[in-house]
Length: 438
Image (tube, rainbow, N blue to C red; front, side):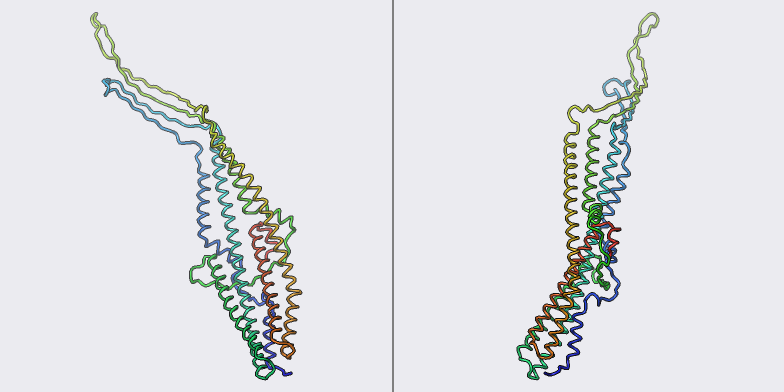
């Protein structure tokens, strides 16, 4: 058998194709945490939510203790009715005094609404962080896949050159050369498709980060899997249920509805209205005076100053706010059921994420310790056998395809583990995720 002079090149391409993809990632600037921070800083939705929350908090603190007093002015004259001497001027001040703690309950409802809005903002921030982390991971893995396809293309081109050399020497049939050429063309097509996928992933990440159109995306840092194990499932579930954003929002909505129920029940108690009034009345009446033993008619004018106190209270005979109480009572009961439903959904989601994460780590360990080395060794054996003329091109291509599938499965395991861990980061408390932070 002939010794092929391209054997060193073939061996080099085989090494490039079999080197673990993640180990070749160079140090770069943009990490997942940096991308999340920039996305938070440039999100118009989050800025709008912050302004809304500020308004709700200020409104809750600026609620007045009492309703505005009512000032009443009154003036009357008898000039138009033939009594020009009759006139009166009055002024009154009425103040409503609630007999129940309505003001404090209104503040409680307003503060609960502001807190619910804040928790909703926190949930949106966590959701955006999860989207950014996943987009960042997808962009990094897309670049890794592109590097993998480039090394495979180099290997396919080298195999084609060797096949042509052996065909020219009469050591290989022509259809073997055609197989090598078809494999090279497929690799070029896959490489072009992956290049487009990388551009799409980078564009999606730039959009989430709020980069301006045309602004280049900084180079991405290498993706590193968590090095420390997560705490026990019971600890993670307890922390997750305590800090799950959807569950926390449902609990706050329940508190808000219960505060609203207490408010409408307090509003069913009538308020007392206290009024202080002052009136100045001027009047005249006919009078008779004794003048020289004769009664002569005359007019007597009087001016009276009257100060009065008025108390008024509605009588709850026909309406005791039954309709509003029934409505809010239904909302409060519905909130309790929603909290329980959210708790069950959160527990199931956390269990599923933990199962996917640990299963992906197990699969990744299997790929790196067993499947990857075995596939790499098998490909090298088949390459050496093809170089010696012991096997045909189809055998080498089949082994290359199996090894490529193994590498793709390893990348999929990395993606599943990273996505699951990213979702766990968005659901668990900060101090919990830092123990296993990558």
